[in-house]
Image (cartoon, rainbow, N blue to C red; front, side, top):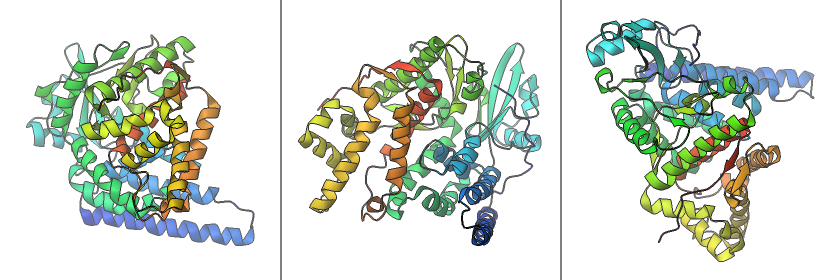
Length: 441
């Protein structure tokens, strides 16, 4: 893990009024950016939105970084939706995949005293005074006892208590940036809130981490840390320190295609096994949660965000990866109805329109499953995928639909798959795309 030398943050606004005021100040700044943009455009009509997007992205990310928690987590999620956000936002928000301004040591010590009754210096022989990584929900410190090295994750204060209010305040940004309708937001916001609340429960994460690591330890080239209950609490999580590199640092070492393929296959096998055997999945596949090594192994961390797949929904969702769906119109329509893509209340014209849109989506997103082997380095495929994402976000028919299309359960499953696709694409990995899925009635 690479150390992060960002200037530390001495406090986090934790009260609803404080956090609302920070969001409001950002809204004022965005308004000023629009005024400035249109004033310049009046003088130079050829001016594009690029400068406006950059200014707005900087202001929004600055606010989310300061507030941390669910607000910053939303930026992290959006940064993985290539082709949906304008480039300026996507690039700025990608910073949240790896790091954010860390908290100062006194706040870290206070969390230890409050939840474990001791300071970190009472528990460990050594404890890094500065965070080595800082992200949306918490930050990581290194520690040792004798020769053993640990990674200690410390949750930011106030994060768990501010989720509901933060999500209400972030709604206007989601509407503006993602082009989501209010109905779509209503469908997904409860799911996001429930998952974020689970993610702030480090006791739950400890149990899930142990269970999933034990269940997946047989998967070739994957490595999982051990977790330590005695040094953990509901706001602190201690595990083995895993060596390795985050994606960008790993790629800078110019790994061979063989090594890229080994890591890519390990990631594919890991996700496939979780989806279809465990029916619960590591649903936070951003690059900061994977530590890649030059021998082709990959360390996997952070099981805070785990999507448990309901049995009934599993059958509905994964029938959509069946290649025969694309050649069997009746079977495809039934699948779309079960997934909530097509509604009983749709007019014939709407049914025809949405069938066409979701057929195209199905053809694109399931392409890796349509053969035994797939080259995720194929640039043309991802260009089509990103272009379709842009098209989807701009369709008035979707934005003005009286009903949300899809299921809340699809949000984190799609996030897992598209996050996996992104990782494999960056690796340019060539993968055997077998799947353990079985269409059982």
